[in-house]
Length: 433
Image (spheres, rainbow, N blue to C red):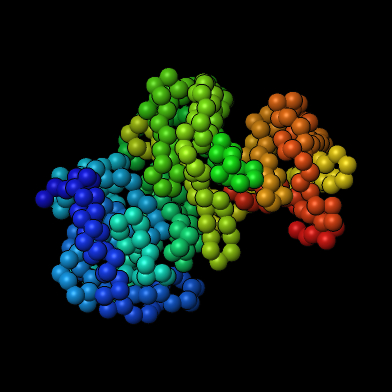
């Protein structure tokens, strides 16, 4: 049986219309148990069932025990996202999809087969859904122990980290596992996994500014992805390449997009007119999750794919593993809150510092340094809170605010990387860093 994506959607919609999906969690034999997250002690609601169909690397169909029916329900596994499959079938040879998608599906299918089709479903919120699908953590029984499928797939490089604000127990663990897989270049993190592609010898860098200044919904173009060609000699033709976030939002470059050696281009999330160095995604709302630490870790990533589906460069945030920075100890920040508000950044190192990929934060305000922000040893850069960024000079920048942002009685300003590594912090009055 070959099931294209449209057919699967129609099946799920039909089940929803019949009230089946909504009724399943309440009618099933739910119990309380571990979420199977290392170090996490809060309980989850747990169900058991038998898999009837493996859709792709992150979706299965399950006959849930004790729900009073023999129907199967679509389950979207929480916390990660496999690449897209186009043809869904139990016949492995007939499956079709993007690079890595079939490997992820085959690995999931193998794990479920080793568990004799039995799975353990878990959720913090029993009503959690992803569109028409129940959102659940899924575990299989291997050698007498329930093992979290998400942990296995992410650790082996079969999927991207995709945090969820409702089912957040898995966020921190999966983000760390994804970083380790990326460092080891496993699976999706191998830039030549799908074969040699265009400009394979040209190193590329991706930066994502995920936190726009102020409210993200009010400044969609404050979110952007910047790509730099680190090759000093060869240009990279980006026609047919694409960038995406950890979910499925994608921007594909037009045929004429070209990145000269040593140069950069920027993809803004909102509307605008494309040029050789600026492209516009035309999203109607923010694309990237703002970083969050603590118990409910949130974040996202930006990923650059070549036309054959290899991930050629990426940035995931916030940093969870080996969170150091090349400029640690090289910069000092100070601020003047009264009169002409401004922030000063000084290079105290013996080498030049390029601030592209770094920002100032004084919540809810953020300032991302523009591309021409290089500080030589001993130099200072002044960032005026007011003023037009179009009037910037090399060492005099403008935040672009229309009024003061620093609280005279006490406030703080942090200098961080886009991965949320803190390089320096300045506080005054009753505030602390």
